[in-house]
Length: 138
Image: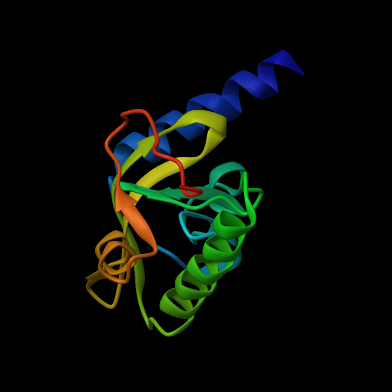
């Protein structure tokens, strides 16, 4: 069991570091504005199937927010991301790196447009670069 886990983790590390760009084969689900799951053909199943993605550079309201205002905004932002991804013929992940919770953190492009920029311009997210998050309830 430990050997299989070690081999899987080695494959995971080499696949992610070998390519900092990937084309998404399909969107599995969208949890919120900045977190969704994808399938990526050509990657091993352990990382290429149902892989969680975190959109780099944004902070969006949380679905399980602290107040009604945040939860409502989170649902609007999730719909925006769903529509953005669904309407894109090509979804690409660029500048991929490993984040917490086994997710990949990436710049997400839909038909050449950057999702993080679109979320920020629509007022549904804020720029985020690792600093302490601001609340959405104030």
